[in-house]
Length: 148
Image (cartoon, rainbow, N blue to C red; front, side, top):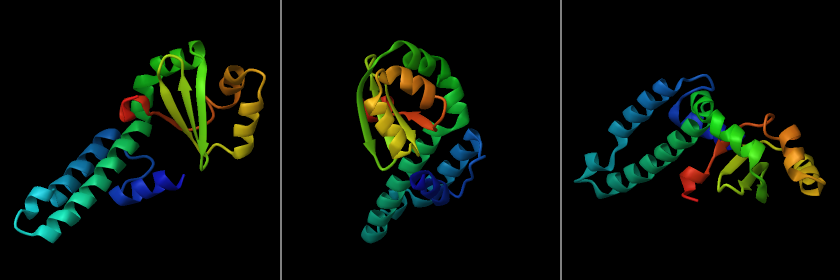
């Protein structure tokens, strides 16, 4: 997914970067471009604010899809996907967003449009998702992030 690639490029990390290393990279970037460093330079401060917003967004996104984060959240994810019904589905630019009855919201990345269409038209969306989506695509929990 382009978003993932762009965020990794912005922070200068790879797919295999560990969470602790990602945190170090993030902190170093924030030290260098924190808006408070530009108190006397209005234009520099505005530029630093924009850059720091981008870095914060990239960091939080990459943390949410990191293998360590997903491994830690696996029991909750498994319970949600096996016991909670689907209440809403959105699909934009190969990103599938599924809302569950328990309030959890997950995004799945690089989902082909034909898979989305099969999900929408499935006799049982839950069964289709368990067989063809939950274990097949990179995902992240967005309910914590967006406050839903």
